[in-house]
Image 1 (cartoon, rainbow, N blue to C red):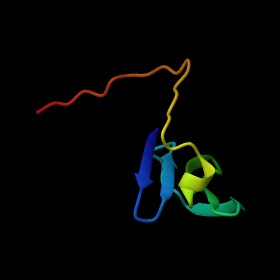
Image 2: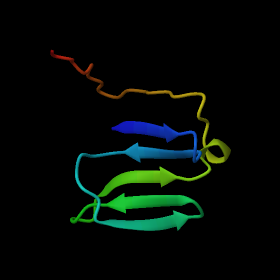
Image 3: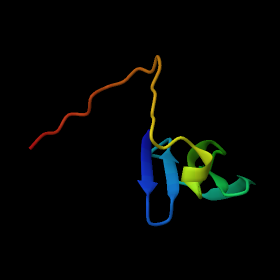
Length: 72
């Protein structure tokens, strides 16, 4: 999962999967869910994110985290 914030548009994209999005649906004003070809949610786009979510704090609880490795 990746969180990407775009300050120039005040939008937050939560990338839930490496699968390709084939459909998008706005579920609430400024909140769009992206779906893959099997109907699974693969991403969440939030417009005006600073007004809708707490951008200054990210808490992760009981998630199996792996540290990405960088090879060169």
